[in-house]
Amino acid sequence: MNRLSILQVVSFFLYLLVQVVLLKNVVLFQTAVCFLYVAYLLLLPVDSTPMVLLTLGFIMGFVIDIFYDSLGLHAFSCIFIMYIRNYWLNLITPQGGYDSNVTPSLAMNGIQWFLVYSMPLIFIHHALLFYTEAGGFDLFCLTLWKVLFSTLFTTLVIVITQYLFPDRRRI
Image 1 (cartoon, rainbow, N blue to C red):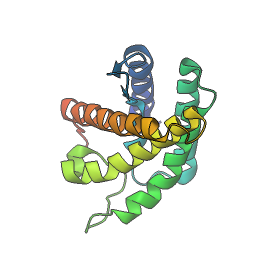
Image 2 (image 1 turned 45 degrees about the horizontal axis):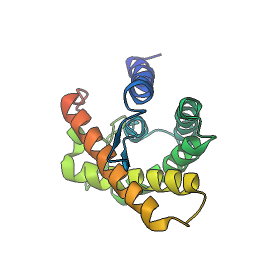
Image 3 (image 1 turned 120 degrees about the horizontal axis):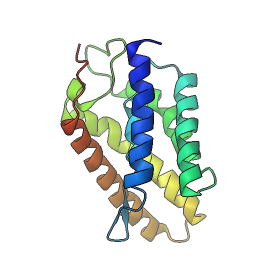
Image 4 (image 1 turned 90 degrees about the horizontal axis):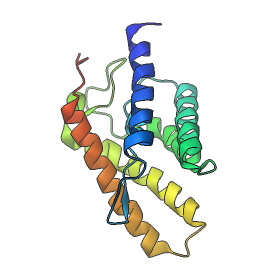
């Protein structure tokens, strides 16, 4: 295993630990929930293969489901955003393209690009999670309210985390 692989494994467990121990019961105004573990999935290297992305998405979502007792909701949401991640990255490719083994982080591409990259994926993750949890669209407005504020809360925490722990592997 090379240094990057070891760093990815350690990051996996750190994001998992923070989510399960610290953020499991953090809810703002009974509406906004923070799912920081999504940052691990979003910050995987750009040139990761789809099979690796889907596998890591399933494993992360499944472990979160175990701690949240959510019967596969997180696994489903994570697998879906990992499925569309490469398509989204291709749509928002910078003019020079991506370097190999680079992570789509705030330090590499700036705040504007990072928000354009992360917010739609976080929104889709939260929408799938909360609408599936609600069992449909019966409470459409209330669930949409929860999705929007949770997306903003999660994105804010991810951006703060990116500023507190910048990516030191800048090429």
